[in-house]
Length: 619
Ligand code: F6R
Image (cartoon, rainbow, N blue to C red; front, top):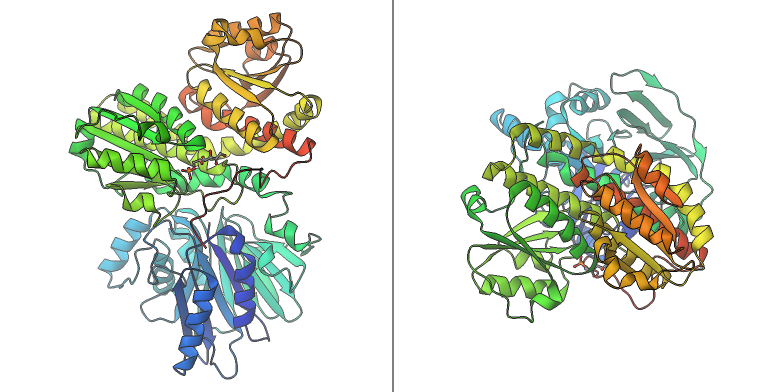
């Protein structure tokens, strides 16, 4: 989830590019860079850290009499980038833009190139030299290989060789006054001004300069110049699309037109999962976690896994426990990190301890991980932030690739963590031979379909969530019930409602109802039940009946097409059907929306709930 800005026109581009990057700052980033075309060659500057560091690097180059700032006349074509590291550490070499071997082609990219490893091998054999560890650098070398005097053609040919989930913008020193972009699932939008054109990953990057925007669609190639834009499909057929006038103010634009960051991030969940699974499922029948530095023999021999985490990350771990135990038959112990660290736990060198933390900086999780290591266990960190403390306090890291999360209430990092647990569970099952290959292949196919199921589930659940919220928002207590894989979904749904709406909630294993909580029920208690497809669905449905018999209003989250489940509750929200054990990754979506709509109905600031702050790790 990096930020991209490109400019071609009549004005000096350096300040416009920096201003564009500033507007993308809300996305969070760990390094930034700019390349401009200066008298037939490319000047480039990159820096780790915030934009102040980039400005200092520009000034330093200028003091030395060169660089992006000293072109005469000033450069009017350039690209800029803020990076959120996914492949390769946070270093200046890994910051974008990336050049080819001749340094005449530079690119900036947002997203993941899935087949980067095979392309890198192939290009290296043909004599290409790489200067970074990134998947993105492959693209500049691919364009170099395909370049025959026309950048648009070279980009189109290169696009055809790439697999993944990305958008990029390229420039060539021989073609000043032109930028070429391509899009596969990650956003790319052109801004058309008077005698100038922008190409960016988000509208705020150019909104101060022009309100005329043209969205680039999937599998399209766009060429921009001072005089406007031309779009083709990936085969070169022209595409006509008129510019739209953007009416958002700047604050709305930062949120991509959504009313809050939380809603924007809810809608980024398909991307977050797609990026997290991308190149880790390179074939139809297996998982590639070779980036995780735990060797296969070690993974085969693990006797126990202990998962430590806090809050939402803990709930993702709970989902993982069901999947890993089911698929890989490894016993799992779960603990809240703040409990684990103080209870003198039994740890041995045969344990793998997994610390799940989106920020990589949560003190209790870090302390639990350290304790485990001191006692001889190996520690795997699952985190969203490259270079965070968790990555230094562990033996191996599995990155979620959700992009920076601005909203305090975690949403997209949760689904990315759950997806990571599924990847790990499948890999362990493969290594330990606990699932037949056909079952692994079926689960791989299902996992690959999750991003589109997230999209359809969000689309169908928005309206019912709003309706239910309007009817229920004034209640002062909500109970959540679920069994088995539905239980962590309840816990997470209840936490979301609690933290952003300040309504007391409880989440219970439905089988425990009769042991006490049933006393809470009367007509004034909405009860949210996770009744998605699973081997315990019948049991959940009988719990729903029990609840209704007490006069409580039941709202059930059900799998599409499950008639029986839909009939027993007072209101239902349907989620897409997937393998039952993957169901939590879609079942959580209506609960996020419901919490969101209830908080909005109460007119609360969902992005900044009271008494809470996001652990911030990037400037
Ligand atoms: C809830 C939420 C928190 C975090 C928890 C752990 O929406 O965001 O419960 O999940 O504070 O944070 P990380 O994952 O950064 O360790």
